Length: 372
Image (cartoon, rainbow, N blue to C red):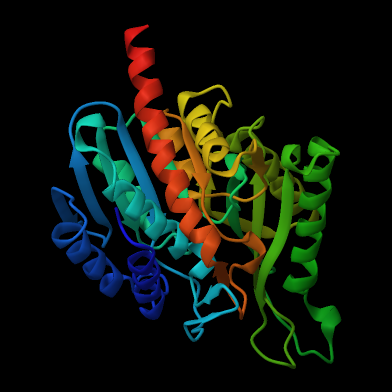
């Protein structure tokens, strides 16, 4: 069993390695060494995109514990202050990554097969989890590490569509004679308002987790301060509840773009930058039951099952593998990406016990289901 000092020092080491997306190699190598030399994993390797994978045990159930090694940019001095450990990634999501690793290291090898994976680029383009999915690793259950708080289990995330829409009016003019040409920034704003209005019409719900949301996140346009813009682009971020398929939303957006372009006599094109389906794990699944029992064991309270409005790596793997997947981990989500990102050390240490108990309950419940 790992000591408290070892657990804290390992997390500190992970935080002291600066790992913005696609710069995770130092952490991957450090974890590979620890897995093979100190933590009892039987096979450890780094794959072609930089993910660290470590396995131990044999047979069923086959359980994945997956966290991400990357962080958003921005260095934060690593320090302990008033029971909190500060550092970039302390909340999102190195505390969950290391707590899962330590829990996996304590799992008896004869109780199933554990795969620990630290993926790259979660904060970017999900390169790591997409490569993991392509490997077709045999799995029965998966837990992703993200800050949820000790008493919350995330069972659902919305899907996501990201679109880059471009409007080209075909000409430009001197800013002192704007009547000589259409203005692409002004015109593209009409596309945005029509899309936003139509999305609101088809998805009006009181509960935010059941609503399609649409955000304008980027705008690019113009070539000079005194020239009307010929071409401009906007990026739309659309989040989709589990009751809706992404293709349906895309078809609505396509109809709106075509309609507005025809009415205005403009050329408008769009490119899909991301298309991720929503995902929800059944609250009656073995995995959700096991996680709930582990929190009751350790914290003596029933957890809350969360359906979140964001999108996570569990969407990609859950939809591809068709297995129960949840997200869990120490940390306060609202501390993520902030200038004082931190994790409560007691919460971090407790999460190791919760992950350990979850593995025990998954193995026990899976065996009971197999014999029933």
